[in-house]
Image (cartoon, rainbow over all chains, first blue to last red; front, top):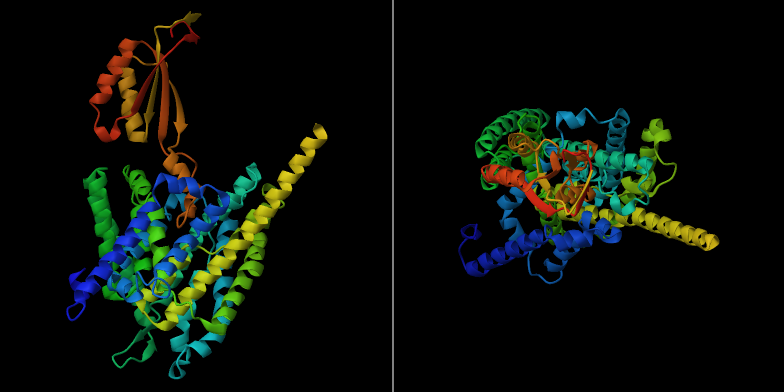
Length: 431
Length: 112
């Protein structure tokens, strides 16, 4: 990795920068798995802030070239293969949710909700972002073939919502618990949909030898098919190796990293999305029977927080804060969509279960909060092409996420205070 | 029939998964520990992950069961010693956590 930073003047300094950047990011990621960190996250305000990754993104922005310049964007992109492995890791985590046994338990209303949410998110984001592309694309590129892929990738970031519910849950009644399960599991299902659409969007166009962008729908279909075949083969191979690893943690980790690295490398070589390819691998592995499977799942899921923190930090380093008024307008429009449209989609889809769910709850504001997968997709977008446009879009995703995190938390805070006041009054009356 | 200053001990064994528990049950039968009470349990790691999912929220649909079990048994020091020898022969990865506590009083069926 250090050798890949190239020769020439300042190569030692460049190598040191790469090393320092990676060391900082990895160390902070490991902090995410420390017990004191888990303790801090159990405070509702902190939990909401941290599960969305906003603290880590802020830290990444602080370390990045626009503030302290400890880690600059080009340095980070020089370790692209490592970042791709990280993306692959996230893809496998998302894919492993797609176990037959879990998917069979998904209620019909939840399928309706997630698909309805995905369609609404795509249509509304394409409409809003399409307006901005006219300003952000170079004059010669203001055509559908240039505008559609980034707009669709942005739309993928708007699909779904954050699965964490503890910070906005007021009570632990059975009805609230049912609603929390629907919110959490719907978020997981939406993450699969978002990465699926991202995989399609990132294969739709291709630059030819002269740098011209062209639609490649047929090639995209072939790439998807190849991705499925590759994922199946890697999944079967991974299963064989995991059986040989026989629950040994070091061997299991080695097999997992090997499978993820191969998946990421093959995806890069065949030009389909790393997230998408490794999600398929996760789907295949999760659906292969084996008593060691649950151990492996626990092992992989245990790394979720560390990998998430890594990507939130990276997003902070990679974003471009100068998005201008058009960018601010796009953020405002997308936030409005999240605030106004998504909760309505939720209520409409879940009305068949109205009798089993609470009449009122801050959990109904849960779909406002952006899914953490959006950050991984945003980083994947910058990784696929490190252009100013993609970095601005990443910034839009980050800003939408931060603003949309606030409302559900404020709603639950107000209701908590109302409940506490009500209880205090009742206690006073009883005294 | 109650026993004050009982010679029995409370044996607590925590098996973290199905495979480990399965072997444990075999061992309990071998040493004659037939009167155990078993409860499903969950490790704190699983609870922390459930509380703060990030990418994998779909697992919320799974029943809250990780295969972890705790077995409680009021038994004699000799059986405990036999159980200890059995668990020492288990592979390290499957060995349960064993805790032995003195019992001041036990109230229950005579064969305990």
